[in-house]
Length: 167
Image 1 (cartoon, rainbow, N blue to C red):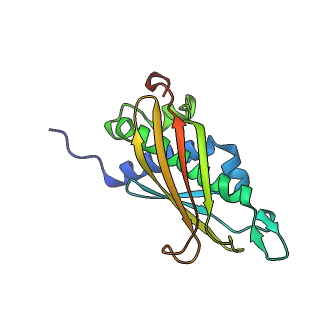
Image 2: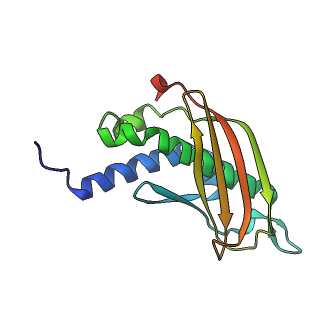
């Protein structure tokens, strides 16, 4: 039996694949969304930027920015979960991903609940895949700012999954 792969190599492979996946969503870069990975758990971070303010009187984050942040978080989480087994088995390498980007799930519907005002500060979000089949997936996303117990938005989305041969 071969010795286990050094942890630095595993970490580098996972981080490179995640970076490639996030870079494949240009709007995430425009908003400044960063995805932090701890093991297989992802946390999306929306760093505060003046351009994200929708109502300067309050000031409050724009509702479209909040919805986009949640949708990007859901799509990245769903894609990451879809690619995890192939990435870990070595059938998919970050280099192969970079050359042939995987197709992302397509949004069927996305319902956002705005629970409180998005304040002018960093936002965080985590998504949970409720169901993922060959053709369809359901994802729930929660977003908070200073306190995870005080959500400022949440969403549920349904997605059309890409064919597995197109990964």
